[in-house]
Length: 446
Picture 1 (cartoon, one colour):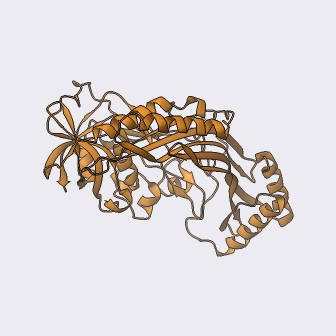
Picture 2 (cartoon, rainbow, N blue to C red):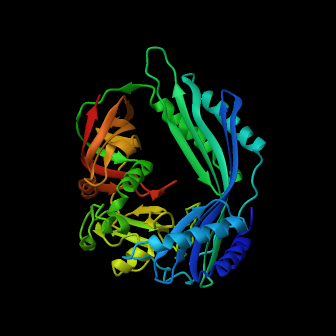
């Protein structure tokens, strides 16, 4: 696999031979491995090393063509440049993308250095030990059918014909455990836990096992729930899942395509409870996978989306920023077309501290821990959702596992119905978020 510097040298040489004067490239080199176990034995070992590069070429008329390739030797890069050049003559003539105005701006933060990769035998040893410990936590835990430890080294880059050259490196490791119970006369119950860190040696294996065990055991004695309106508390993971499902609310490309719950005129309007503030912050200290620039070479930054309930910003590429007279925010992805997506959400409250609501003393409150079927139960353009969930009914100081139920509502109404945010923020793969209390959501029992 060539180095990024070699890719840049080869690309410039190929562009010169082809008479191409304006081009840019964005891509990544990924080296990853993962393991899975089954009933005390290794079940699956995967490893891959791959490189993907997106190439854009502008012709003399200013139109742009784009292509992608996984063949990154000199011949492959030259072919990609030639293909993109030929495609440019069929490119759009309106709202043509251009280089980001910030492709040479200084980055706000340096990327992390890569950490040494662990051996496959070490991954298997940790995962086998976790599976054994989890199964021994309770007699009802019969198996851990979904499990994994994975590690990834990545090198990202952006370069263009104006001399831009950005690179960053990162190492991440993750662990996932998901159980299944078997008890006579009872339905199988399941629960899971996830951990992520910069390297395998930093993974909180014990914490992952403990969380998966406690959740699983808490679901063994389940009961039906009466259909009705309840105060609902969303776990950090569940609330961030909802935010991502309705991310068109902040996505400038969706807004321009009229595929959003917002319009350009929505900025400055109150869309949520004054208790809620939200930012997208790729540079957040808790973000394991820090991204310092986007697919167009624009530096990433903290972008305020909601401040005290008021919509304050959108996520932009350089193209959407130009069309909406805004500043690029570093959220572009280069592909068949330039798309916009969030990095790392930070949910918080700037309101004067109120007495902390205690989940251990809450009465007739539903705690939603994990939302399911988000691909099918969310109508992103209508703002509505109806989703099965794993969770508990909090009653009399006890957590009663809900046998089977769905939570439904309108996302914009939900945002305005937030009554409390917990003081403690929790790290999830999608961002940092506290527990979020919402009044009067519909819960439908089986």
